[in-house]
Image (tube, rainbow, N blue to C red; front, side, top):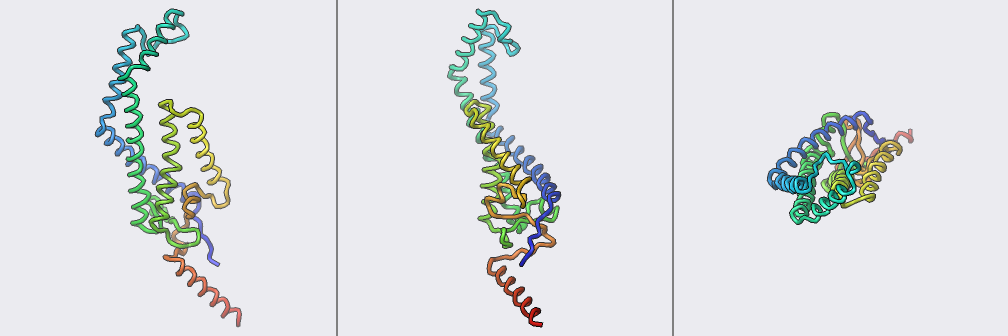
Length: 249
């Protein structure tokens, strides 16, 4: 029987923090470039210009406190807000800002994950990111076989990127633009809660992405990792034969 040499939590957390810093740095840099290329600021400026127009037209500003207005002023304020919300230029600017926000967040983040969480582990083999390489831990299938591109895609892109990162992020964006209400909060809290339960309260401390890909993080120095299932079976048969020979004596 082969012992599973799981990586200790300190190494896993240290590697995760290092990888997170690299991932955020790369993703933010790519987002900045995407924002500039797609001219996001022009739509934000348009929205601010229309807001200033209605402030000037109705005599209000950002410091206006609704509860301190007279009844007549409150009616004017509501009329200003209603006209602003129905303004075609405002509606177009908000729609474009929402669409561009999704693009600017999603695709640069996906590219960052593909580089650091998919291609780098395939390059290093054994599912090692830069952080895992530094702290001497690796990723393998739960049966002891080396991970392949399909499993790394399931672990890094479907698990880490899609479920653990983008679902909460997109829910937050939709909450910000008023598209999602309670459902958005439920999605964010639900994913965070599930991750905490899996990492802290399960025997293997397995996060969502490892559950999805059926992988495990192990100590590189002490864990045997086999290239194929056939190689694993052959090794087990060899051990059984050696144990049988010892028992005969």
